[in-house]
Amino acid sequence: MKKIAFLLLFIIVFNPVFGQSKKKQILLIGTFHFENPGLDIAKVNTFNVMTPKSQKELEGITDKIKNFGPDKIFIEWNYEKQEKLDIFYSKNVDSLLSKDADERVQLAFRSAKKLGHKKLFAIDYNQAGFPYDSLVKGMQEANQFDLIKKNKEAMADYERSQNQKIAKYSLTELLIDLNTKESNTKDLNWYLETANKAGKKDNFVGAYLVSEWYRRNLYIYSLIQKITENRDEKIMILLGASHTAMLREFIKYDSNFEIVELKDVLK
Image 1 (tube, one colour):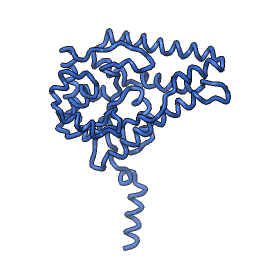
Image 2: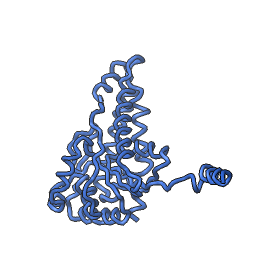
Image 3: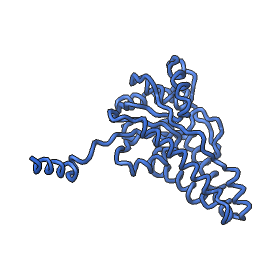
Image 4: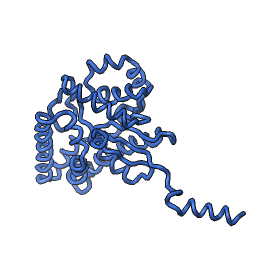
């Protein structure tokens, strides 16, 4: 009997079929601010999602999300204000959809309503710093003129590229573009190739900014891990594209999850 028990244990531990649990699927959607408050460092034009064409696209996108069937939807909302989110979502969603351009309303609320979800989950962490002015000052004090030039060119290139796409692309095309490998790589490149190098040898203002950005996103990911339950097979995460670029890296090393690409859901 002991031999049989030992054999079963051996099979479960060393056989990959027994040893692996089914990965949870994550529909990870990186987005731009539909209702652009102009608070980001890079200044881009606003895309009007309230036009009949964009509203029709949003209906189609959220129909596909419904077909994907996430068990939970996570959004960029201060996790300490979950109750406020619950109250906001409990209002007349149809009324909100007709007047509130915010991406959380237009994409997440619309999807949640179609899925019959009673709530959405707040996962943003708002206590991390982002001392961009100090970063630029640190570059100037260190006479990092090439880095200052590189930073300005990167911002100008991003603004130009995004504004061209906003003028040319449909809403669906914009969202798919934001969730490509190339777009995600550019986000990460700026933090490591530019920001992290800023400051004199004994001034780590650049590394501090980058570490705070990592901290914010690690806390976001921690909340996703904690809130996701064993019974959840699929989840959807809606965040700014700079956040999802980071989350992609975290998920890569988490054997519990696998990413489902937006472009595949929208086929």
